Image (tube, rainbow, N blue to C red; front, top):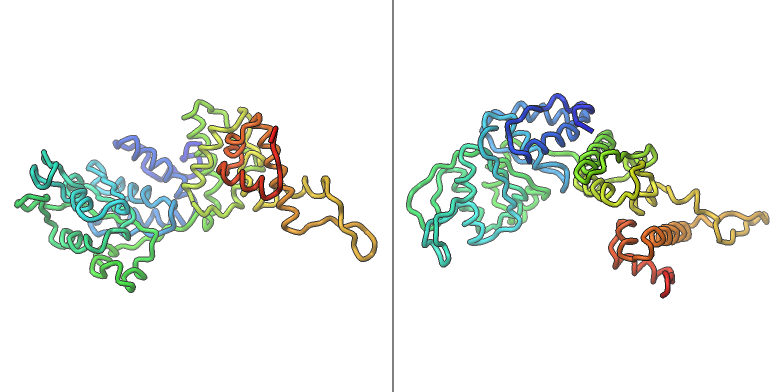
Amino acid sequence: MDPRAYGGKFLPQELDADPEARAAMHEAGLLFRSEAMRALYRVAVQVAGSDAPVLLTGESGTGKEIFARLLHTLSNRSGRPFIPVNCGVLSGELFADKFFGHEPGAFTGATRLQKGSFEMAADGTLFLDEVGEIPLANQVDFLRVLEERTFKRLGGEKDLGFRARIVAATNRALPDMVRAGRFRPDLFYRLNVIPIALPSLRERSDDIAPLAEYFLWLFGHHYHRPNLRLSPGALTLLTRHPWPGNVRELKNLMERAALLHKTDGPVLPEDLPLEIRLECGHELPQRIGQGHAPLASPNGAHDEDLSLDTVVRRAETSAMMRAYKAANGSKQRAAELLGISPRTLRHKLAQYGLKLGGE
C-alpha cells in the first residue's frame, strides 16, 4: 500500500527528483515505520545539513542506500547529483579510472575525456557502497582526495576541486579490518565521523507486514495484477521468518509472489516458500500421521512419530508432489514454485527415493 498509510507521511513526499529517488523515498516511508527506525530518521534530519562524512553499517539488505538517499533528499544538496558507486567490483586502474576519470590519451583506448565519480558528484552526494572492499593499494589515493579536497584526472595536470559529501556504507566490521591491516586506520577515521548502524529486519519485526504488503502492491501493479493481497495466515508466517537477507529478501519474495501466484485471490501460507512454512511448523499439523505407521508407547498406546527427520521428510515430500502437480509435470516450474533451484529439487528427490511422472 501507499507508505503514507503506514506512518510514512512524515517523510518528504513531494520530491523534485528522479523516479529512482522517489521510489526509494516511498520505500523509506515503510522502512522508518518502527520506533527504532524513526529514531534513526531523527538522526538523519539532524545530520543531513552537515558536510561531515557518514558511515552506514548493517547487514546486507537493510536499506543502506535508501538511507543514504534520504540523507541526500533532506539536505540542501537534494537538487544536485546523487552518485552511487559499488566499491566491491573495482580495483587497480579500473578503480582509479572510475573515481578520477581520465584525459584523452591517458592510456591505450582512452580516446576522449571521461569524467570520474569525484567530478560527476559535483556538489551533491557521493555514495560509496561496500566501502570496505576498496583495495588497500587504492585507499591512500582515496584518502588524499578526502583530505585535500582536490584530484587530477588520469593523465591530467590540472587540480580539480572535490565538493561532494561522502556517505559510505559497509556490511563489514571495519575496526576488525583495521586491526588486521586490511583497511587504513586514517581512512576509517576520516569516513567514520558520523556512524549510523541500521538494524536488521528481524530486529524490527513490526515493519515486516507493512513492507510485505507494500512490495506486493508495488509489484502487483507493475505486473498488472493490482488485486493481489496477503492472507492473514501468510502475514503471520512472514512475521515469524528471521529474514537473513533483510528487506532485500522480503522484496524479492514479494516480486516472486506477484509473478507466480496463479489466481487473483489472496496469497496463502501454502503459496510461500517451503523453508518459511517449515520454520513455522505450518506443514506439520496437516501432515502428521498420514500414511505412516505410529509408534507404540510403553503403555501399549500408539503415539505419533514426531522425530524431526520424519516430520521434515513428510512435509518436503508432500510439498514436492503438490508443486509437481501444480506445475503440470514440469520440474523446472515445480522448483520455482517451491522457491528452490532445480538442482536442489533433484537432490531432494534422490535423497527421498522419489520418482516423478514417467521416471
